[in-house]
Length: 176
Image (cartoon, rainbow, N blue to C red):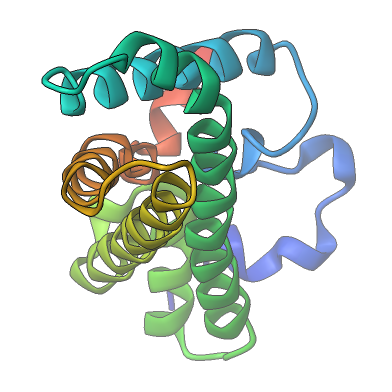
């Protein structure tokens, strides 16, 4: 019977706890110095590209990109919640197969097809949240419906949290 580190998560001392990369993003750290400006810049570039044929595009983007960026973080958090809930549910079972799926969710979604599928669902959930919330924000910012729709679709597709797919094992192997 194969034992998984994920199964014994309750017995790990906090100092030895290994966290998935996508969960580390939510803890205040130096990482925010990179993540927040990078997300802001990407959101700005995608919004500007989406609205390039609009008059006063630059001014509109400067005024509204912070809202789009905040929506991106909220949406990414929704996708993170999908992964956390799945990991918690799978971790409650004593079945080795389910424990292995939960472990793969946290450390390498490519290591298990079901974990990969759950991770893709989490990315899609975040993308759908980005689309609907950005469209709502942009419509309420006096942007016409067509431009809001186009920008929201591009933001959802380009800025979805693909980081969820990054195997955490890469980080811990490089550090160790």
